[in-house]
Amino acid sequence: MDYNLEIQKLLVKKESLKQADDRVKVLKEAINLADTHNDLEWGYDLRLDIMDEEYYTARFEERFAAFAWLLEACDQHPDLFDEYDLLWRYRWMLHAARMNANISVEQILNINNDFKTRLQRKGYGLRAFYNDEFRRFYVQNSMDEAKDFLDLREKEKVNDMVCKACELTDSIDYYLRTNDIDKALAIYNDLMSKKYE
Image (cartoon, rainbow, N blue to C red; front, side):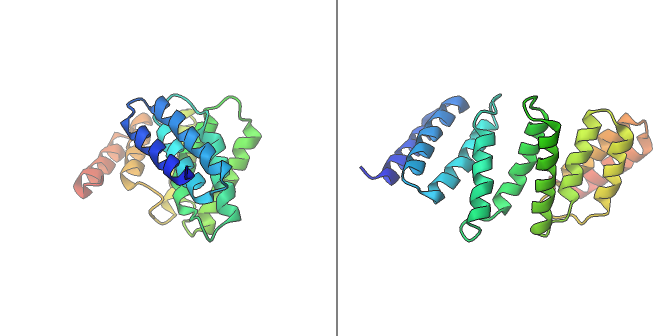
């Protein structure tokens, strides 16, 4: 039987399943079929799907391997795959890496540097990177470092790699936590008046 048809049947089956874990299992079957037939396009799309599905589970079992494969495919076949699809997901992966005790500080720094390089190569500057660095230091309660990245972020252009509403919410949280209520209220009013989504 045609493997394309088999993959399509698996995708229909996936849509009927309620649990994300079950959908991930079906996607793994489909990925195995694509890989067996050296079908890069199916392999790429299915790995994007498995990352999206696993995002809603407590597991990270498939995400890292899928993402590494996707980055390699993008680098090896830039004519087939647009790196843009991966840049938003890269932020999830960076956060997931920081939360994973099995990933060393050196590996995380390498991931950080790769993310920065890819953002700049696509012309997005470092605003998204600075947002992520802000969140890292904010969570660690390192408020001086967090503020440094807030300031750096504001020197970069807003682009479609960032969520303006998320940025404003982060700023409000920061100023509330550092007891600058007036600044937090001013940003809140900006957020509400511009009706960001």
